[in-house]
Amino acid sequence: MRTVRLVSILALAAGLLSAADEWPQFRGNPQMSGVAGGQVPASLRLIWTYEAGESIDSSAAIAGGTVYVGCRSGDLLAIDLATGKLKWKYRATDSIGESSPAVFDGIVYIGDLGGVLHAVNAADGKRLWTFPTEAEIKSSPVVSGSRVLIGSYDANLYCLDRRSGKLLWKVATGNYVHSTPAVADGVAYFSGCDETVHGIRLADGQEIVSFPSGGYTAASMALDGRHAYYGTFDNQVFGVDLAGKSVLWTYSPGAFPYYSSAAMSGDRIVVGGRDKLVHAIGTRTGKAIWTFRTRARVDSSPAIAGGRVYVGSNDGRFYVLDLATGKKLWEYQAGAALGASPAIAGGRIVIGDEAGHLFCFGQ
Image 1 (cartoon, rainbow, N blue to C red):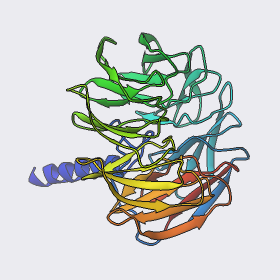
Image 2: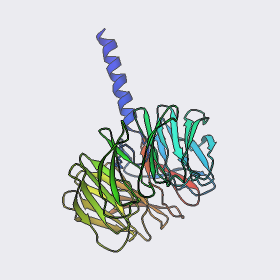
Image 3: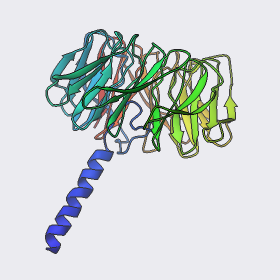
């Protein structure tokens, strides 16, 4: 009996570790922290490249040893993480822009520029259901329990039953919902293009948080308990207190907007700017800890694993930086702009470029 119980415990632990070492949605988790659960080798090399044919603006998701990513051709691709071989291809109703897949319980969700949210069987790429909004979708879906959330350029945040696609509620805002909601404690938080921070209760769609965000916002916020961090098109990065509905600090070193979503680890966030810099900012102080200069704007949202920062730039290079100091540890020249964000799982990093190449790095 003791042996059977020990085997069961070990199996459960292995399952939990496996689940932790996945990247099932944009920014890796519902809190949008951009931090990987697993480790990445200290030295990297290119493992494989997949030629999608058209621009990859979508950031990949990785679950169950499979990479899922959308591209401008309108294809949702499922690619084997180990080999880079195509498993299946699903054609959406229109091009897929920046909407990134979310994978949950055997279903892949993704939005397209025709304004349609798709639910696809992760095993074989077969359509399960679709839901039309009234404008393009650049937001990425987020799954919480039995619900899936999606923002649309029709200015609404939608909540659907994740299995049937039935509309449960929608909340109207004052402008496009470009960012992806971050979820914690049954509330979806996002800073919209209407210059407002919203907190929407998942159970019934009631808005329980609303206060000025400080500017037009396309970036998604990273959550840390009651605090959130995001950049705006008004050239500032904000730290805010969601419960207190107040601004903790603003960071504004120059007249350049922030499109990148912040990654958050320990006492700092890391975010890309259109000033060609990657910025590390103290979460308590709002002051710069370090900056790293690239050769073009940084719209890619950084990812963090094992004390390193991974980020693309429109200069066509993929960078690995030391989280503590900002020192460059490695770079790879892709050749085309890297506006998508890295996904990290299984000791590998996946990112696409605007020439339609999907790169996988590891050892």
